[in-house]
Length: 58
Image (tube, rainbow, N blue to C red):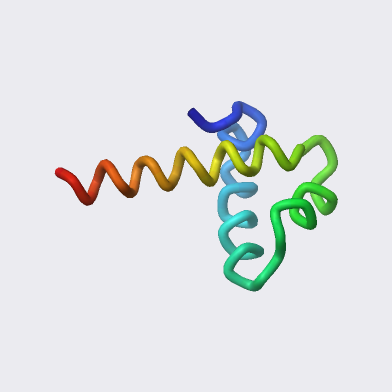
């Protein structure tokens, strides 16, 4: 499941998506947002990927 730090801040979800699409790395994103760790970002990405996989199966 995604980390509470990112889950509670919807704008961070949008910013994460925008920045990754624009070519930013996970580590760069974490540096730009104090309090956000690379591990948290990776957990959110994995959670979102799992939700997409589940949606494709159903």
